[in-house]
Length: 124
Image 1: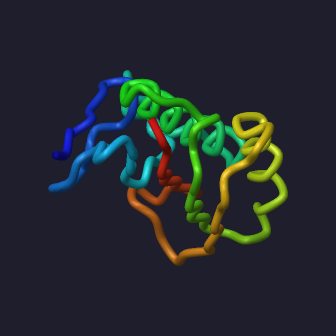
Image 2 (image 1 turned 90 degrees about the vertical axis):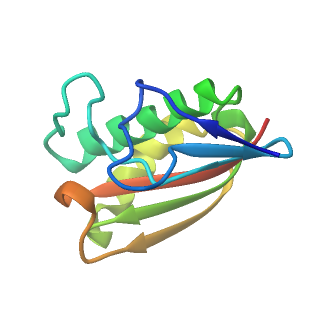
């Protein structure tokens, strides 16, 4: 049985999809972008956007009853691979021990022209 996870502490879905779904003790998130949920604003710069996107992901994980420590896989989509080091620096503040597996992919364009999007799979 699947359970839809939704929170106003992370950006609302901007299409026909759920923020996250729990199935059999696993939580699968949609891609999370760096939109400030309370204002709809997007921070300037890759570091600020990485902090906001990962912070939004953490809020979604919390709503699902889990946490960054329980994430087993992330996929990070970035606008520019030259930002990889800066994003790693921010990422390492949220995932500090027993880090999840991860893919990082440079893409041509992301929703709302943000610089980063992140999705995760976590255990509950």
